[in-house]
Length: 135
Image (cartoon, rainbow, N blue to C red; front, side, top):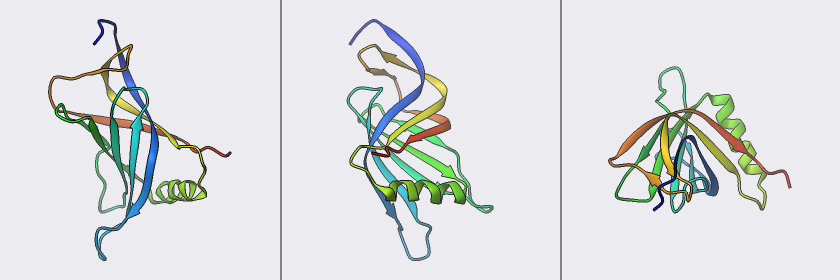
């Protein structure tokens, strides 16, 4: 560990796998991503992107556990944006898609990329940026 710490509200990652899941015949499909953390050393993030509607919407949240190097996130998108993102993934490319989550609270990260948390943490996500390589 290091003594040089910075506060950040952004976590960058690259997508390792993406799949559309339908848990049951009567349930909505969602986009499931497994991402490798880029701005934080040694870890992954599993992101479920859900389609919101008038009857169902949730909070955009990031869950960080202290006992595992796996973060989990849920993002709720309007139907039009949800379908556009799936279409962007379907175009495919040999390079990884990049994602940056913007959080509503800052995290302490060392210059070496170590994350400092003392307990399980739930943080709101205020924005998510995607980079889809064209070539």
